[in-house]
Image 1 (tube, rainbow, N blue to C red):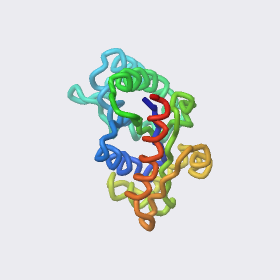
Image 2 (image 1 turned 180 degrees about the vertical axis):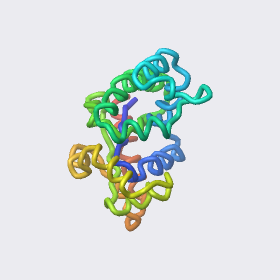
Image 3 (image 1 turned 120 degrees about the horizontal axis):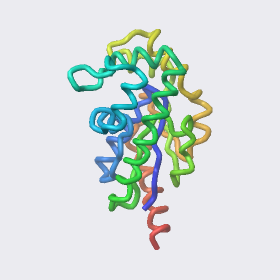
Image 4 (image 1 turned 90 degrees about the vertical axis):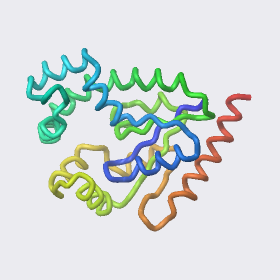
Length: 199
């Protein structure tokens, strides 16, 4: 079975693309969602987060995501510290998940594949790209946040052009080209590659 990475900058629409792959019967591991679960459920991870950020990181037993977000997105050092403890737990969880999948290929959707130097873990990486102005408006709408906060998060991620140049497949989510035909084309290609690997 092929291991596929799916990445893109904030607001690029990689989750939308991942959802289409799921409709096509491909299992998808959503790294962000699973990381949030692990930060609540994994006792060792909870202890490490409290050690770093104090008891206020959790409110009524649940991770206070808005508090933590404010903290780490305004301080690159704190963001790096958080990633250092969360990434290993998510990597381990994703690896165990991959082993259980029975499809020709499985996808791990994650924003920081290249930033965390994880590309060698995958057979192929798909990049989702969109113009920055569109990405900003999507995130403002989705998160009910300000342009300033969105730009701060964009600046903390790898440059979009550099990221996309490293990907094996590129899907444009610019609301001009249809998403479905692009996803289907990649899907057919990966099915062919998966069959070659299995035979």
